[in-house]
Picture 1 (tube, rainbow, N blue to C red):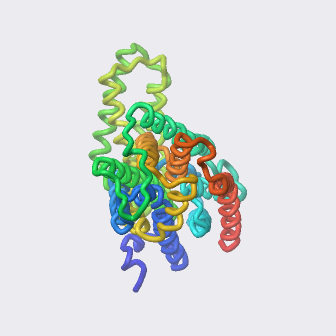
Picture 2 (picture 1 turned 90 degrees about the vertical axis):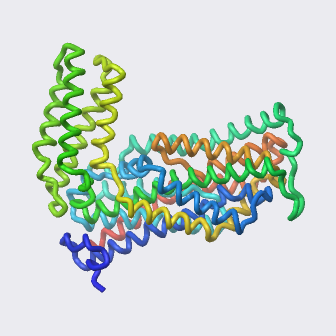
Picture 3 (picture 1 turned 180 degrees about the vertical axis):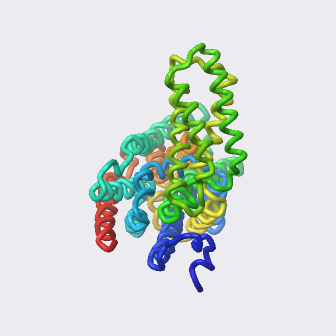
Amino acid sequence: MHFCKIIPFLGETDLTTGLIIVFGLCLFAVVAFEFVNGFHDTANAVATVIYTKALKPIIAIPWSGFWNFLGVFTGGIAVAMGILKLVPMDTLMTLPVEVGACLVLSVLLAAIIWNLGTWYLGIPCSSSHTLIGALIGAGLGFTWYYGGSGVNWHKVEEIGLSLILSPLIGFGLAVLLMYFLKRVIRYPALFHIPQGENDRPPLLIRGILIITCTLVSFFHGSNDGQKGVGLFMLILIAFLPARFAINHHISDGHIVSILDETKSIIQTVSTSNSLRNATFVKLYDDIETVKTNLSDRSKTDKKSTYKFRRQVENLVKSIVALEANKSIIIDHTDQNKLDHQLSELKKITDFAPIWVILTISFALGLGTMIGWKRIVVTIGEKIGNEHLSYAQGASSEIVAASTIGISTLLGLPVSTTHVLSSGIAGSMVASGGKSNLNKGTLKNIGLAWVLTLPVSILLSLLLFVVFHLFI
């Protein structure tokens, strides 16, 4: 069967048969990455409910998979767009499609190889760190061949900081929460360590453990799942920029309405400030530029569509600059209106089709149900020198769910693995001090943490160079 019959919009492109095959491989690879991410990170949500006997594995695994699915489906795309901003989209869209194919394949294969390797060894490793490292490596390869800035270092710094701080926060908050439970709550049943197969927690404690497992699963989906959505959109934009660089489902009339309302708000702000400085002049020019070139966007013309995308992005930057200008006073009502129009404008360039979100949701949800046992054993048995108590399981899950949830709202990717692992370590320290930690396991986790970025960077860079030899 011809590819264009399977994926109808390929008929609108001039991709060669070879590139269509590579395109299919990239789509398969991103789904595989999210599938691997599912079973690689399942332990983060289900280890505590399994090892505290709150749920049996046969129930916990599909339950976690379902909530991972919902997390991706309802989690928005802020994190996904953050992933896209790590690569040189502006330059990439001006180059042949083959260059984008090299970048995408090197990122995906590097991430999958490292994730599978650490999973096989039963070492909890961050898929987020792996992905960020792979993106940096491919970006460096891109710079090597094409110059310019192949890596958005400002975004790398922002994301890197969240990845480094989140496990430290998880450890500290888990220690504090355990001390609170021990010194204030003082409910003996909370600190019970289950001994046998039928030693199950009381109903209230069991409910708390199931709720925290559910929240971690949901927020894992909403954060880690979005990374898959971002990678999927990177593939679509790299291969089919005219169709996916902007959201063609937003009508011209709606865009004109957004522009007119934005201009009206800016005129009100300008009048209330009794000035017309360069900031306002540029804004008016950017609005008129987008409106004038609205007819240029096309599902088949890469150059004109890309031009329109840049004009919208320039307008967004101008509005952000206006809001950041402390010499300009914007009242609360106008600020809310302007924020709304800004979010509407961003939807033109920052979007993901529903079928993309559904595909990643299913991949993550199904992956959650497979291959979970290796890392569950490490999380549940080997981080500490004692079996998890109910309080330790609940406190680490509460900390993980809240940290990941807040990060998702801020559009920052974090490592579910590191947050929960550090949370369990913190709960163990609060229970019995440093001697309660398994130094061997922590050494392996720490080594994987340290090596993930450099290894994934190097692996992705080498793959980019190898693939580039064939274009």
